Image (cartoon, rainbow over all chains, first blue to last red; front, side, top):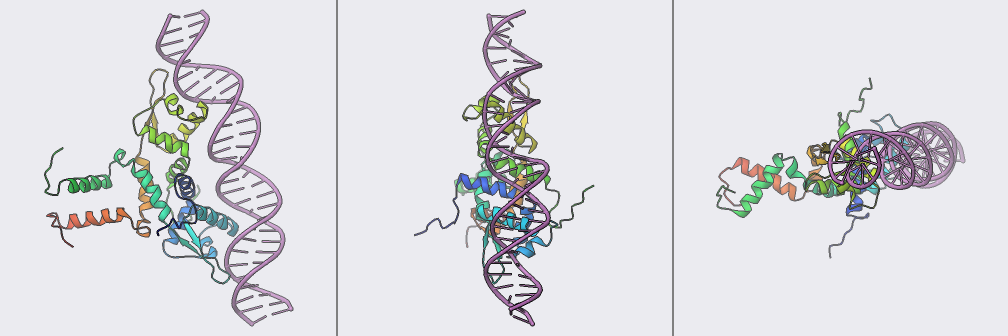
Amino acid sequence: MVMEQVGYEMGAQNLDAVFAALADPTRRAMLTRLAEGEASVGELAAPFKISQPAISKHLKVLEKAGLVERAIDEQRRPARLKAEPMAEAVEWMNYFKRFWGDSFDQLDELLVKLQAEPKGGQDE
Amino acid sequence: MVMEQVGYEMGAQNLDAVFAALADPTRRAMLTRLAEGEASVGELAAPFKISQPAISKHLKVLEKAGLVERAIDEQRRPARLKAEPMAEAVEWMNYFKRFWGDSFDQLDELLVKLQAEPKGGQDE
DNA sequence: CCTTTCTATAACTATATGGTTATGGAACAA
DNA sequence: TTGTTCCATAACCATATAGTTATAGAAAGG
C-alpha cells in the first residue's frame, strides 16, 4: 500500500507554502547549499550575515513547505533537502510552458510526436 | 551600492517577485484564467468573492513580477499573460530535478539519447 | 449635459514576514 | 561539577501583504 507519507499536506495548499518558501533569496541559497548534502544550522548560517535565530526561522518555513527534513544528531539538528514539493510547483508551471516555448517545449512536442507517430511522418 | 556578499546567489531579484506572485492562490487562478486569453479586470474579478480593488492589487503584483502585461482598450485595461518569467523560475528549480527524479528526468534522458542518435533506433 | 461602466487610488485594518536580542535547554568536553 | 557548543524559543520591532470601503477619473451611452 503506497500511502501519501508526506508529513505535510500536498495539493494546492502546499503550493502556497512552496512558492512562498522559494520567494526568499536566503532560503533559496539554503536549498542550494543543501543540494550538496545535509547541513547543520550553524553550517547553513555561516555564509550569511543574519543571526542564527533567523536561520532557524527560515528552516521552519522550508520545513512547513516540505522542502527540508530535520534529523537529530547529538546536539545538532541537520537539515536535509526534500525536493519533491518542487516537482509539484514545476508541474503547475508547466501548464504555461506553451507560452514561453523554450527547448523543453520543443522536447515535449517531439516526445508527443514520437509517441503518436513512431514511423516519423512530419506534418500537422 | 549594496554588494552581494552572499556567494551562493546571483542577482535573481526577479525570482523573488515571481515566486512571491505565484504564492497566492488567487493570483495563480488569475494566471490560469489568462492562459485562455486576455481578460479585463472585471472578467478577472468575476469568479472571486473579493472586491475589484483587491483584484487590481493582485494585478499589480503580477505586473511587477513580469507575469502580465496591461493594454488599453477604451475604459478597459485588459491583462495578458506573459509567462517568460516562469521559465526563469522553472530553470532555477530544475537544478534540483535529480532530487525528485520524475518523468522530466526521463524526458531529459530521451533528448540526450535522441541528440546522440538522430536515427532513433528503439532498444535498451 | 447626465449617467453608467470600468478601473485605479487612497486610507485604513489586520495579519504575516523577516529581522533583532535575550535566554534557556540539551548534549558533549573537561 | 563547570563550561561550551548547538540550537530553539520568546519577546519585540519594522515593514509588507491582503483585504476592506470610499472616492474619483476616463470613456461610452443616453
